[in-house]
Amino acid sequence: MALPLRDRYTTPTRRPRWRWWVGTVVILLLWFVGGSVLSLVILPWTGVDPEAFFVEGDMFTSFPSWGFLLFALVSFIPLLIGTLAAYRLILGVKVRRLFAAGVRFRMWRVGWGALVWVLIMAGPALLAVIVSPEQFDTSGFNVQAFLPYAIIAVLLLPVQTTAEEVFFRGWLIQGLSQRYSNIWLLSIVSGVVFALPHLANPEAAGALLPAMFGYASVGFALAWVTVRDRSLEIAIGAHAANNLFAALVVGYEGGALPAEAPLVSSGEIDWGVDNVVSLVLIPLFILASRLGYTKRPKREVASTA
Image: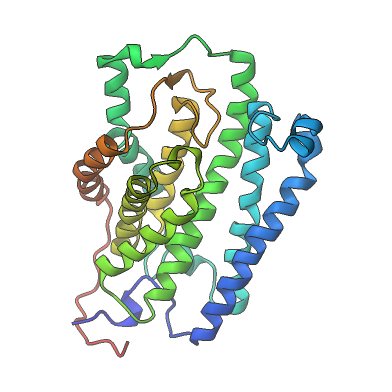
């Protein structure tokens, strides 16, 4: 029996399909075009080396670490604003429904999602530091370089992760949920779509399929808890915790984020090992994040979808 529309993570009433497609185009245009323009506007305040950036075309070494982070993260502001605006103006639905559909949004569950993610998913990284400290480099840690980098990370990484959540988990899943209610289908599609832009990250080079699985598995987990809870609470907290942990605690040399963390892994990411570990830990994350979960009403009425 399919869930009635009112009991799914979606709009309270069905919206014409063309509105979802128009909204998606508008959001992506704002993200790609608006994000690029905004990054270029703030370029003079990023400490960039103009010759290295414009002449040599070396984006990664032409910035100080804090400048690159600022340049990259401000591009997600149009994604966040665009998704919220499309939801309100094109779909005609109050924005709070995007964050929680039919349930109350609770900030403490955002914190709970962050805590569970750090304990379960980041735990192996901390264990590796204890068991194999030789794999991590601390000699390059520079407090003066880290402080401005950390300030930018704390201010803008939650904006970036929330923007991705309201689009990849919020907008995408709510659009699909107009027709489908199967949690497996919704989670897999969201996970795969979420993985696609992340394949441009440096750590995915030369290992696209394993990286695709790695990113998709994270997207799958965040989508599952979103559909289950009919809320972005857990996903927003977990995603922010993941990126802040990678930026401020244990980083990877050659990754998408500059390696300014106190602990930096000196080896390349082993996607095979990481993916096996994820297959074990993701179910634990899904189970542990159930605290405060609000069950759906027992209205087993067939949907017209």
